[in-house]
Picture 1 (cartoon, rainbow, N blue to C red):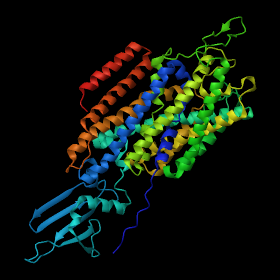
Picture 2 (picture 1 turned 90 degrees about the vertical axis):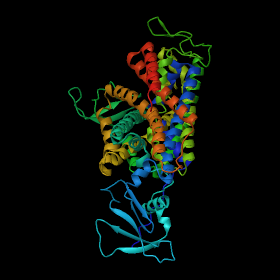
Picture 3 (picture 1 turned 30 degrees about the horizontal axis):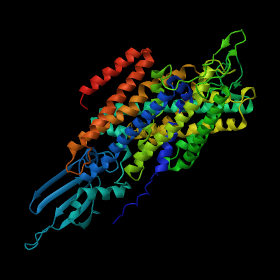
Picture 4 (picture 1 turned 60 degrees about the horizontal axis):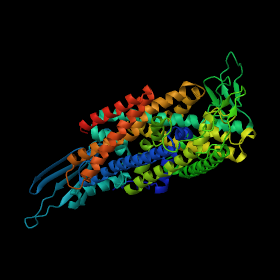
Length: 598
């Protein structure tokens, strides 16, 4: 008898690990714009929008985790979409003592590793006194039938589909009490809910989402590191093709900002020092599994927290120096050198309630929580469903707190820079504000080190984005692992190098993210959750399928409609810059989706 190879130990992620991964994923370019956003929204509205976004993101995560883990209940109960994948066919004929049960346990159908193996249970002749059939279990392979077939005597427990499922999963090294990622990811949910064609569209959406998030984060990380080198060493250099204006292959910059090589004469495609460091670290982290990179993820999360706290302290001190800590502004107007005063006593004041551009702040705040599409891998590695959704929800609270702290502390300084009240201030980006903290002497060495730590912390989310793209390519597009790794981890960095100094790159990332990320992160998971409840309820054979009450379903549908309409409002507002058209789009989407049955 040949015994199967013992399965490898199951890998799990703790609650703190899931929280750290989710929080690091939310540490994107949006955090550097929060001082501007808070100044435009007003203090009260800014905090309100943050709280609403935290609640929305946590709710969407809860529903997504529910949709993933309820598939486990469906399999245990003998029904649902997951059952259809594990048991493609089952034939049963019962005629007194002559009963035959054939179970095809091939996962995924023919052509895969388990295809062709069946179990046949054939009754043996019994005496007249003994009415209980003795079952002889014969296991064989259709592809290679031969004289080596072995006979095993089994009890009637083999007829239990649940026990048989768990036995086969144990042999395969799978945990039957956790969702299978390739079946319950967002793409897998779309396949179960709407079919194969819908899963193809969802696959493209997931890859596009990962690409938008990853490219923006890669560009931010490389720019921060280059800016740090300028601040520490006085310059940063890059390698680029020579041009008519500059025959050299080396281009250097002394401009410390989020666009360090803009205006330096460097070509569009360059390989900078910051790019090399960020790409090397990112590709190295992307070559290991989530559980194997947790040490680095914890460290980078710590860097994020330290950076956010220090930035808030520095910005608070700058605001106090401006006299803009409250409504009483004591800062004098600054002379622009031509006898005209720039700014007035209210030049750095931030409204306590609603700011001058409230509707333009909804999108930037909402998209700071666009991490939902990256959370299925970590959710599937949790020991329990409760651990997964609580950790994801807590990550939203933690990042919401950091966002609020950074935005409120930097709003007054951002307003002062935009109104010309700070000499040398031409950029109100968060890191540019920190670089202005020391005046003519420049920032302190501590603040430069903190900027460097923040730059390294932004690397943490890049492997998670790349993992989403890689697993989508492997499980849904059928791309082999090595090409998937190159396409998801290496190719994006090449694209960043080719467009590092391009003016259009930032606009491309912003618009693609605006059109894709909102629906992909907030609308699609809720839509699939609503649909899967009906699909799994109809496909359930027994009464063990878990279902929500009607109130939860109604709340989910209401949130789905409002979120989708809000995303449409933000898109129309960004394109047309018209509040009337944006509100019209909101009302139209609400009206249409109210009439449509999911």
